Image 1 (spheres, rainbow, N blue to C red):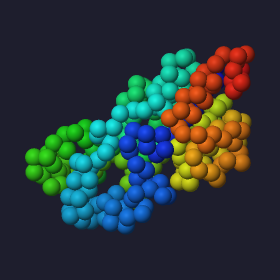
Image 2 (tube, helix red, strand yellow; image 1 turned 45 degrees about the horizontal axis):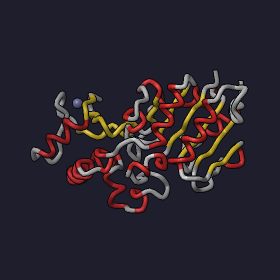
Image 3 (cartoon, protein in one colour; image 1 turned 60 degrees about the horizontal axis):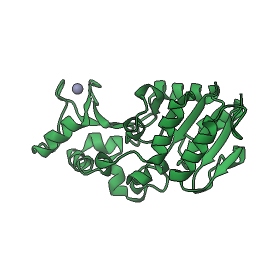
Length: 249
Ligand code: ZN
């Protein structure tokens, strides 16, 4: 069976009303004050930064967001019997909310749906911390050890989880098709996964409105809107080997 790896970036979630925060042109990068709220050293050093950061989380567009046609198309591909792994740069959890098993999703930048303690690493649902903020706590601390709590996302200045990154590289090496969707492929090391996949013989397909540095390695480049282009592409990839233009046995 053809293993399809899908690397998804901010562009897959814009139809769900979630803007690009952390990309090279993202909201945080364009606003130094906002960037401080998601930069580890500033966050740890300054309770006022943390207070503002909790207020930003409380009002995040992500909480009301629903998966869109592109997220659902990935689930349909998986349900067609095609082995699928998603590697995502997003922290919104929309792939799982669309119905994809958590086992099939690697979150390179973590998840905004949980908190993690910076001292004891205990994790808990984000909703619990946000309820404490609603109740008046400016900077809720870890209920286990009293340490500083943060979103379970990879902040600027933090390393990616080496285990997650290692799994992502193994998938990039093993897959037959690698679809990069809604990502500028300009943030490392996520972007290099596209190169690793191509080096190991995978067909690279880029679905993104703007050119990416990996376009010349791509067998196919799709510039159409993701909400219609990805469902059409994945339907083609799900076709049996002898019937589909894009399938290969
Ligand atoms: Zn703790």
